[in-house]
Amino acid sequence: RIATMFRSFGFGASKHAAKKLTVRYGGGVGSHALASHTCSISSASRSTRLLLRSISSTRIARNEEKGEKSAWEQLMFLAKSYPDAVQLGQGYPDYQGSSVARHAAADALVSSQALNQYSLPAGLQELRKELVGYYKRVDGIDLDEDNTTILTSGTEGLFTAVRALINEGDEALVFDPCFPWYPQMVEMAGGKVVPVGLREPDFAPNFDDIRKAISPKTKLMICNTPHNPTGHCYTKEEISELAEIARENDLWVVSDEVYENVVWDGAHHRIAQEPGMFERTIQIGSASKLFSLTGWRLGWALGPSSMISKINTIHSLTSYCAATPLQHGISVALNKEDGRFEGIPAMIEDNHNKLSAALEKIGLTPYRAGGGHFLCAGIENLKGGQGLTEMDVVERLLERCGVSVLPLSMFGCGADIQRPPAIRIAICKESETIAEAVRRLEGVDLS
Image 1: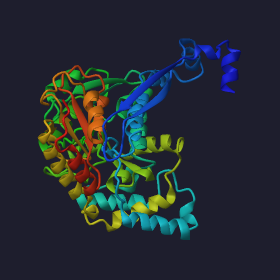
Image 2: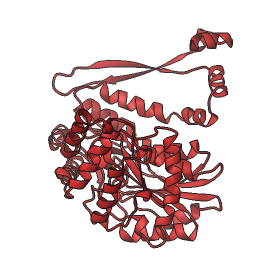
Image 3: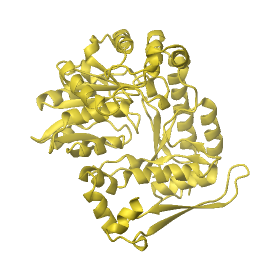
Image 4: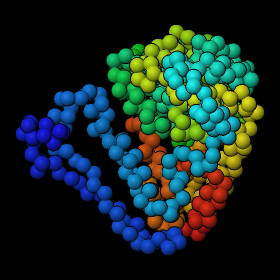
């Protein structure tokens, strides 16, 4: 039908050129021999792009033209085309998530009639109650159930929070590097992204830079701790200063805290607990990260009831409600959680330390993380590696030792800042996976 529609507008098939991207892999791990893989990336003609823009949202079209999605997909394709590689690019666990949650959800799927039907859009009352209890136990936070809403992932929490806050022309401060979805969400809501650069080695916020970036149009600051991609965890002093900036400038804060249980340098600090901040903060949490169940797509937003109500309205018009048996599984897991999360946070810290040592031995410069699921490493000090780009190192790691990582520049959002080239590595993996990566990295020459 689409081809017929294009022809009806006078666009022949000959006008749809295709670019070819050829990626060659050499040298190998085990029995992997030299191979060549070719993928096609569609490149529609200018006329076709204009047509697509005329029949779709211009905000979506602008977002697609930037190519963030295609760049991500190309890198994932590159990694998966090398089946023997140790996958440390995308941040998904290769271990089983919470056994308590999985068994409780399985029981609900098989045995319960009510738990296999819709919940209310705001979520199962039992889960909202357990969230209130969990945050009271771990942080002493006093919440009511109407300060919570259950969503189909932390991603939906971010999306609905930004949608609830941003009007056309509003500005949002976004730290660079960042989770790549932040700037796209702001722009799709009609807002303007104002990037604020973070500098290695610790990627701590620079408060002078933040204040300089604020204008009369600034409405929102997006914070993330532990930070993706760098692993920086806000200190108490940093959180207090960010809160002061928000109060002084009447800013809302969306605080992405999906990695909240994986902190090894100090404690996890929440901006919503600073004086005068609960009423201007939307905190995002995620069962995907908290219980290592990324396929479940279940998260939550916490905040003042007036804003939670707006988020819930947007949520009810999109996904309506999260999967009910999975909500039940998470409620049981929250109730029984003893704070150790089946040893996974401790394992991730150990992964960080072992992989950092291995990267340093081959000439990379690991930037110490304080928590989260990722580790970054600079490439500028590689022996004989002058002039190498991030992608050069990504490809050489894949080709020469079968380890898949991502370029840090993928996580930029346009800040006017010069940073050394670096890579991002996922450490939310089994100890055995990291041990294999360390073994493969030993002695590899990236020059």
